[in-house]
Image 1 (tube, one colour):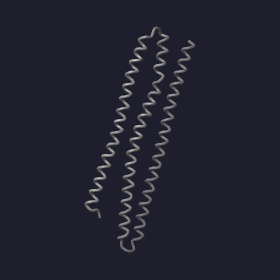
Image 2 (spheres, rainbow, N blue to C red; image 1 turned 30 degrees about the horizontal axis):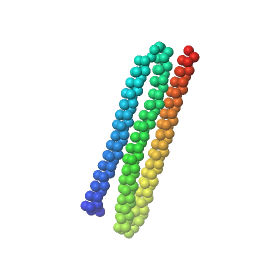
Image 3 (cartoon, rainbow, N blue to C red; image 1 turned 90 degrees about the vertical axis):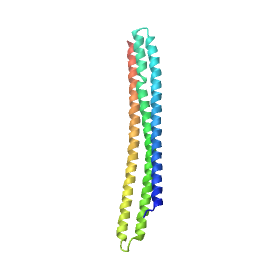
Image 4 (cartoon, rainbow, N blue to C red; image 1 turned 90 degrees about the horizontal axis):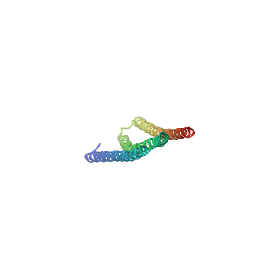
Length: 187
């Protein structure tokens, strides 16, 4: 049976875990706000440069060339922003997952201790029932570990696919820009 000290200790541990998770969530939010502020500052500076460049254009040919150079880095910037967002979300998720896995491992250990204690105090002849419960708990733990492993693998595949898609988009925009510049040069 649980005594008052054990209940208070469990409650204190749960509160500490909650505050730790809240802290990790705020760290992720701070990183996101910092990223968005940096993007806004950069966009404002680039907008000023672009406006000044457009105002200094002397003819239509120069305007077309300028337009191409201004649009080319857009896909690269979007891909970089997406990578930063993904990194922030991934690191925050990893921190939360680590805490959750520690909590689950602790709960599993406590549950196993309760089962062992119950087995020691079980009446004679209940060995089969105790063995059945232990087998069921071991099977549930094994299933949970399999799910965790599959989730990690899916996350790794999603990350690889995200990187490949971002790289493809950047390369496609670079190829289109080069092609567009080549057509203007021959015109």
